[in-house]
Length: 153
Length: 153
DNA sequence: GTAGGTGCAAACCTTTTGCAGCATG
DNA sequence: CATGCTGCAAAAGGTTTGCACCTAC
Image (tube, rainbow over all chains, first blue to last red; front, side):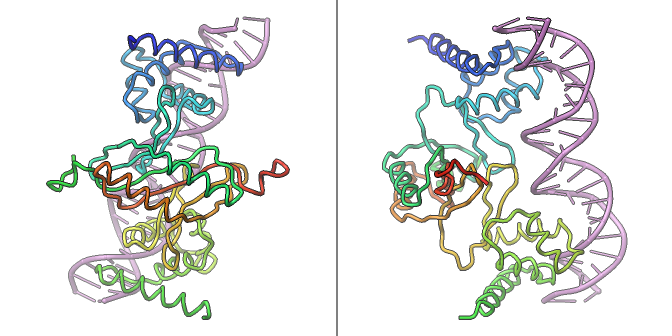
């Protein structure tokens, strides 16, 4: 399946979702969503802005923030904070849920998934009468590459 | 065991740890640590400042930040971000490790602990050659009190 | 035509930093 | 008495907002 096809499908999905909420589908939003979908996983607002500006140098930072907020609310994008003060985003479309290991030495982000882990979280929540809407599990430490040598990029 | 005794023990521990690092034990640091230890779990720098200022109105915000940084580095305090832009802190002394459920509707923070969860995190990390130095698990959703009614404070 | 969106720049807010004077060890 | 700490105020740096103009529907 050519990459372009899937991307267009996903774009359509987002467009449809926004319209259903009475929101508009503008050139800027299309560009931001397309760029986000085409991009490596974990971008800051500013990085995304820079990428978008390669195509449209006039795109404003405010629009990127506003669009990310809309996308997050609609569930297409998830924010995670890397602990360095800036939020990072990743798109959810076409990605199944996963958690993150963050290397404190080189900044690498490793994704992983463990179903039993998810189940136990649910169980713990149930014990406390809590209903999970979303969750965030991050392991901070030293990644494989930073074990040998004493590494760090 | 009277609360005061334990508090003084813990104060002494912190004092000793800082001195070992060639750092000084000042009135301000003593006040900040004492206030932190005596306080409900999850405070922002600003809330802690306000509490301290009830005793010493001249204490500066910068000193609170600097002291929290020192305490965090020494392992007496842990920062967690509630997703609202400001970091929250909790002291570790006299508390065993736990994770958090954050109610998105009333802001309540519920602590919980599940050893099997911890073990599986370790196992997942091992599979990826990753060594965990610390971790953060937060479940966001609706707490027990916010289930009935439709609640929210 | 009318919400809603965009760009720009200024405002916001938490956290950090430079500096001169002060206190600890 | 040297080094580290404090307070103040200003700077930083990411994010949000006011406003005038524009555009999707």
